[in-house]
Image (cartoon, rainbow, N blue to C red; front, side, top):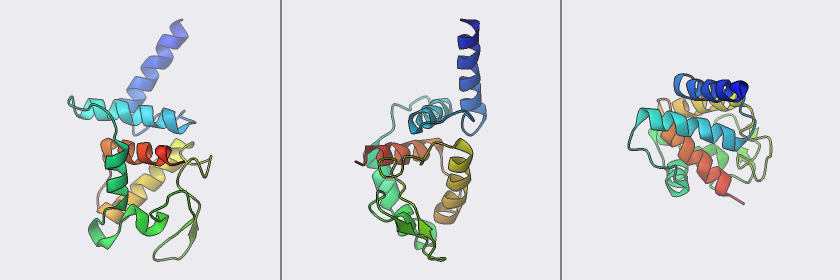
Amino acid sequence: MQHQRLYGWLILVGSVCGSTPIWADTPQQLLDGYKAQAQAESPDFKAFDPQRGEQFFNKTHANDWSCATCHTSNPAAMGKHDKTAKSIDPLAPSANAERFTNPKKVEKWFKRNCNDVLERTCTSLEKGDVLTYLLSIQ
């Protein structure tokens, strides 16, 4: 019982203080971490929205790029980097079961891609909305 309580506190502290819990191994666990962060950042936070995530994913931001520029408007399909032409595996977990299972990789790519596309870091609300959208793709 004490271990469960300690584990719960570690998840909460890791989610609020860190970028993501390092032990998340499913997209849902990662999403739970983003939810805790979003709640800590905004008391008005209610829930992630797949429609808002889809709009964000397809919207052209800085540098005339969107997430879909490289990942395509169908994230269940193969993508291709706009500048390097390097192939990108499908982003949707339904098409690529390994997506969003390694928190370090997820944060690395969110950091890099958000800086490329937005010229800033993504908020936990944006990450959660996009992940919720990607999880809704069948």
